[in-house]
Length: 207
Image (cartoon, rainbow, N blue to C red; front, top):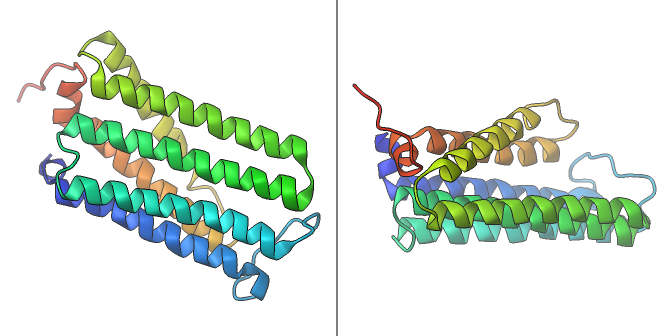
């Protein structure tokens, strides 16, 4: 696809994601001041601290997406497979950051150690899996393993897309889900690109 041959356009996609995350982080931090309506668990002891912790996780993720998008746009990361590998890594790292900050919020402001540790564990496992997949995509040779990893990623991002089109309860949730929906759709289109498929070991399509 011509779209995926233009690295500046690829970078712009994740600049858009970064912008959504920045907006999301600002909305979360404004919740205690009544600028937006969002239901906060009644168990939260310090609403301001809770929202700052969660918002900070989104803001850090936004900066990482922006940094990665910039590197792609200036050619620091090039080649379809290397770009795919880097994006998979960034999705894993940012998911970990968001889940860990959410867990800290649960532990510090709600006092729910068990729920916080579970949230953190899910983020760690997800990140480790994507980091390993990213490494294998970028360094591994063409063959059955890369085809398997390609299939795993397709399934993972389909699930991600479906999860983020479910009904939401607030504007903040809508922005958060929209950000992840953009990521999921973009990554699925990227994985289905002919050049990427060939680099992952699939035979070229016959015209």
